[in-house]
Image (tube, rainbow, N blue to C red; front, side, top):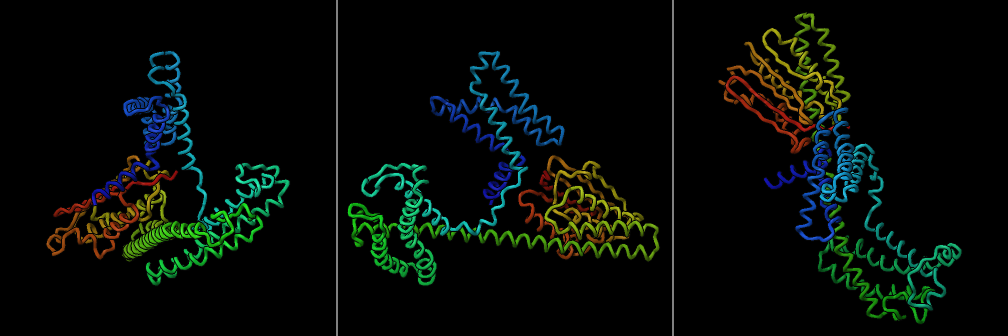
Length: 507
């Protein structure tokens, strides 16, 4: 468990789009390998160290640019990939000792800029949608394409030579001009070579779709073996005889592996058996890969369905609580009721139009959270002290994305179990901060001492029916695997929950 968790965390960090230093590490090793004159372990290690020292300031600027925003990020990038390389080249031209220590580095910095361009294009350019070609890329179609390519290749070679049948063996030369002028002969050669290679393809196809899919799948390996042997003994001479009918064959030359006009030659049989033996593991491996892909897709679909289900559980839970609160305010004819209705409409608009999305901007999620707290603050201001610390810059942040209705669970549970559950003075403290791409929410609330006298623990009370923190924990496990940390602490008179989530960059 530890090794698996460590490997997932390591590779998710090492190959993260925000930390592309694995690409630079691979480049340093490759560049050192290609630029060492006398290659051995000592010179190779020395070269790697020299290159690492040389580009470490560049990578530091790259790291700072990833931590910064907009203008500052661009400034750090320009320092690392423009100013530092120029400064290095100027010093190198004016210092012999420096040039001797850092030699052949112009190509190094050019390659670094090229890597940056590749990373930029990877993030900005929309990848090619290959889903429509996915079903067409099958083993049958791939082998059929290989048959066409081989047929076309040998057709071009034979049509490039005068009397290729009589001039065996021929040199592998392709004369494009001659092939264009004698296109009819090219087509004739292509049809014959295609028919010859299709004999081998036919053996593969029967092995795949008849013997493996039906005989082996239904009756087992033993029945497959004797059926495959029988089929090969019958098919090999028949297909060889069909090949002999092609006009390309002559007394001195035939397309058969045996090189003669005997369809029962042992070499023809051997090639048929080789096709059967080679295609068997390939077909089984391809089927295994298909099954793994189908299982992975099914797991992904189940995960997405479960996430949707969990979000739909949260929405009515919150809605019913808010409507009850609003109902009580209308009954008491509070002046804040119209404002509460307006805030509720904003909340419902978010739930209806964005609550089912996979991700929303951090700005929208915090606006939803702020409206909810303002709505509740009007209702409980007579008995509760609320301390809300949300940075204004954070409330306007559109750079990061987050799963919708994720943060509200902690706030809602604090109101329901820490404030609504008591008629005594209560308090709630909410701190929301963002450091780099890590969002931290600290929710700290009081607990009525009567909860401590019940048989259930305060932590169990706050989970309440499986809709609150339990749902949050499940959503985090599904949607932020190895990218979150949830800490729950329960004391006799207070309850503390700290949530840290690694957010995705909107850019």
